[in-house]
Every structure is written in structure tokens, then in C-alpha cells.
Length: 172
Ligand SMILES: [Zn+2]
Image (cartoon, rainbow, N blue to C red):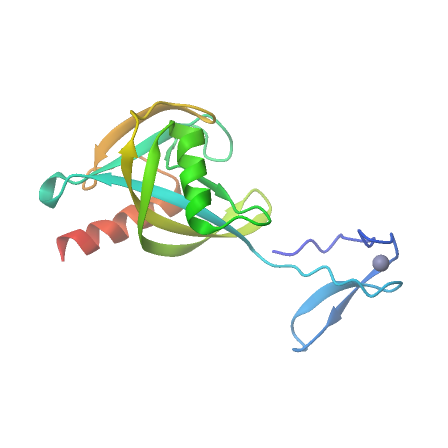
């Protein structure tokens, strides 16, 4: 989704006009005064699906959200990439912030389209393992718990997709 109500250039406050660039069906706001282009793109996020055990005893670590959207549903640690952030360090930072644990990042489970309120996002979900620390609820969650990969509680839609994908992968 693009913000079609953007009106002024963030650099010079000149008037913005939506224009096509390389392709006639793709438009971005451009400043009619200084030429600044305000590219409209989805925002990347990373999430950590923390796993332990193997075979029929694989468990995933979930945290119950206190914050909107999806308040009350089970979620996993993660967040937006800020300018200068890299994937792995962001995952490590968010796991520390939200569950007070150190993790090692393993393979990519998948990339998922999602929305965060009005903002279109792309979430990259990685499998992670705990390296040190005992998980506890910090930041935006009020409870942390291990669940069987095969019987997860109600989670946010994208986390449900990731758990189902990991489940298929594990039982193949
Ligand atoms: Zn401008």
C-alpha cells in the first residue's frame, strides 16, 4: 500500500506529484521543486522462530503479545530493520530485547507478505536456537512459553504460516 495522501517534499517542502519512472504502471511521489523521489516500498522485518528438540518433540518458543495489532495472540520476537541494520544482528537484538536471551541464527524459514497497521511489510522468518539465557517476558509480551511445533496455540497469521511451513519441513 502506498500513501496516496502525501503532499509535500520532506527535503524542501515543495509540492509532490506522483509520476511513473521506468514502468508506466508504477508511480512514486516526486518533488516538483527539487526532484527528490519518495520511493514507496514495503518495509522489511525479521522475526525469530526459536526452536528446541528434534523429531516428534520439536518445540517453538512463543510470547503472548500485549500490544496491538494482534494483542493477546502468540507471537515471536522480531521487528523492523532500521537504517544500517543487518538481518542477523537485528534478530539477535530483538530476541534480547523481547525475551532476554542470546540466540544463534540458523536457516531462513520463509519470506511472508504482511501488514503492520497501514504499512505493507515483508517479514523474513529465521529459525534460531538459544545460546544462553532463560527466556522471560520483556518489552511487548506478558508471557513466554514453549509449545509443541505440532500443536501451536493461536498465533498471528504470518507466524501460523511459518509454523505450518516448518512443520511440513520437519515431517517430510
Ligand atoms: Zn523537494
